[in-house]
Amino acid sequence: MSDNTNTLSADSVSEKRVNTTDEDFIASWQGNDSVGAVASALSMKPASVEQRARSMRKHGVPLKQYAGKMRAVKDEAYWASMAALANAALPESDGLNDA
Image (tube, rainbow, N blue to C red):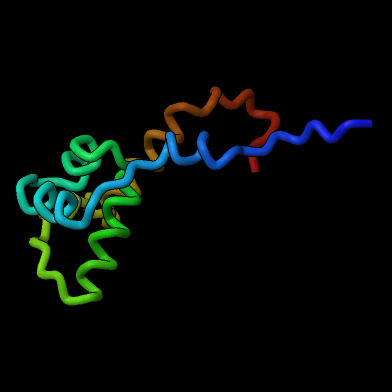
């Protein structure tokens, strides 16, 4: 019986990985305004771009900071509106399961 496991050769893995020099990475980071733009420019995943920037900063490379993500404030009014939305989507009660 032959072993037909799916293994990746070194060639197929290296075709998927992008080898970007630190110099090219820094130039792209400093010349763009978002992680997504750098990822697109270098054909990298955004998570890989973020990790590489963290690593460079850890070693003293002064990369610029991008603006943070906009986050919605989830106060009591927000949760009340979510509850109302969920209640509106519930089927009408037939009176049998009133608790």
